[in-house]
Image (cartoon, rainbow over all chains, first blue to last red; front, side, top):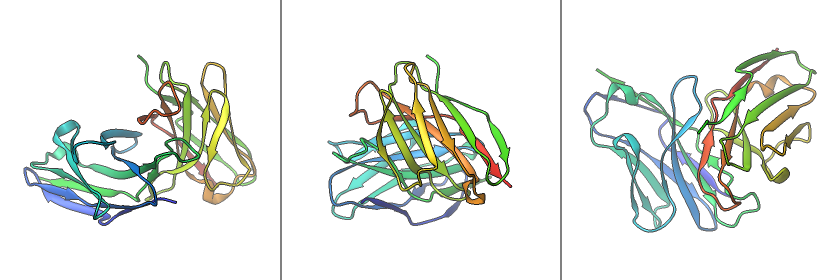
Length: 116
Length: 114
């Protein structure tokens, strides 16, 4: 069974600073990897996904993530954050060929707070 | 193209009661997944339906059950509610075949059990 660990429960940063949200996963088979964002009182919005190919994935709102198979990591980065990036961020994995096709296993989330 | 919608937005129930939550999939999507998100936690997979049949289930007891209708809308039913069932319930719809990779989430239903 797969699992996801988000290493930081909260990350406070100042506006226009760079940020990295860390995610490690565990799985015995190949996986797809995702980052979702959740704004207060809203559902989840997909930021980006890694399926195959280039290990550097670019998503919406200037976010990017790098898949590192040897370290089983998929860290999310942004070069310069805005106040509007304040939200909860979830890393998720989906095992290939699992019984529940493409069910997502989520981490516990990282609350990114961008201060002025 | 309409997105995923859920109803109701909020719900308060008493322990032991039953509840039904509803989800309308994004247009053209035939797969729906339900997740439970407890406060301060990530979403947990409850089950998935593909073309009206259950296509996998997470670690939830049988009192959590579901239905998917011919128009691909879906229901989540929870019997004998417990206090720990208080959570945000999210449904997500996805593409046109079992191998689709992207799930589109609705805004969720906030269930409070007292």
